[in-house]
Length: 265
Image 1 (spheres, rainbow, N blue to C red):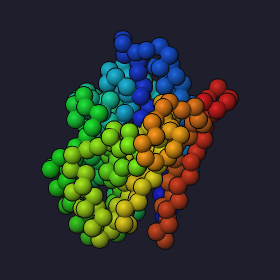
Image 2: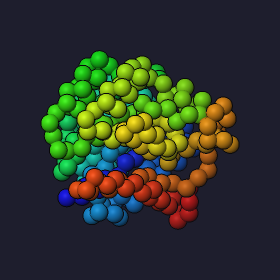
Image 3: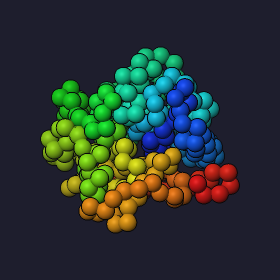
Image 4: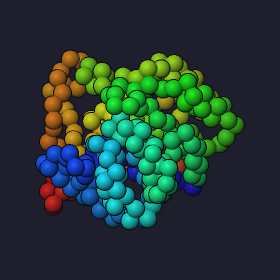
């Protein structure tokens, strides 16, 4: 049976007392428009993955805003924390309520022919990340399982850099090299879903592909796609990504545009 899911990331919802009005209003409007579009196509989806930075400020009101937008979808929403989520505040919120239903940190969730593994790569109040020994061992155990289900690793910091210096610096994480050796040596190559870098891209290393969803709320771009070209805020169409995995091993990824107030954001 084919599996279809949406991958979104870096919503940066900010509803706390220190929210910047322009930023918070725009981020909420973008997330609201995305949620409307997800609701429009929900009958074609099995679930939604959010690869971190649900919030910009890790405030309880911002996590409540996430719930307000995503609970009505009526779909499983599977999430892990991003660096802007704490991650301590996220993990505390995930002790109960709606976020507890969404959180897959350190868990395996099997849906159809795939097995999702949720990782927390975030360090408290740090932009850069790390893959802990506990998470490394967790992934190693799961990749060694004799299972027909395809492993899908969900993490905030992408393990394969995009090749643009400023983004490479932002995406840095301790243990990434060892982790890369682990996943590329697996008998069944995993799919990796990530965020953090506010520019959508795909990176392939041997048989493993990492899909980074970008940030519809705060996209960044550069004049050149690689090298030392500086990054800057970008005005571009809003989109998220829909994945289709079928029984034959085919994997199709479609960029799904959505509108903000009837026009491109």
